[in-house]
Length: 210
Image 1 (cartoon, rainbow, N blue to C red):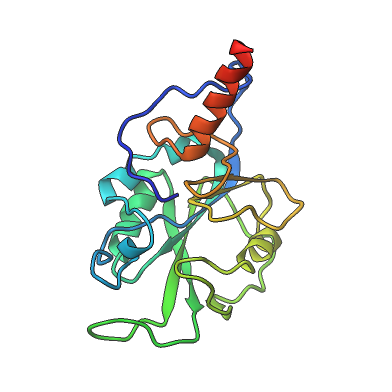
Image 2: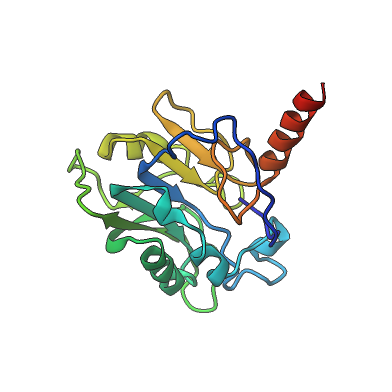
């Protein structure tokens, strides 16, 4: 999701009485604004979100009682990521590191990795215990996370799965839902509109007028 609209429109769903789906795995890659506003920062590629705005997302309402949060953070956003994890109702457990095979930016260490924070709510053990914490995947387009993460997540955890701030639909037959500014989202989040919400509303209104 790459959006900064502050107003929310009530988006009507096809079944107002349907019980909201809860997810056992939430996989998220927020557009952090921390140390990303320079000429070579992420702001040149997409809209950013403040820490307070990210923390305000009602992610806890989407999660099952026993659930896992996998949260990408940049090096500069690591403390903020822990705040977000707590705000969303998860406790930090451990992390994994993606080795991106290149020398990046940095005033101290030259960043060549990104961090994936692992948090849990209730009890959410891995079903596979042979996964290394170092992720050796090739680098893709700016900010795009490895496609290999999808089968990795499916190997260690059972769904249903929700990807927040998705850039594309997972290439998977498993029970994945997605939400974000660049995709046709499967869910709506009150207070956090994305373009597909308005497209769905336009379609609904057109059907009624017809």
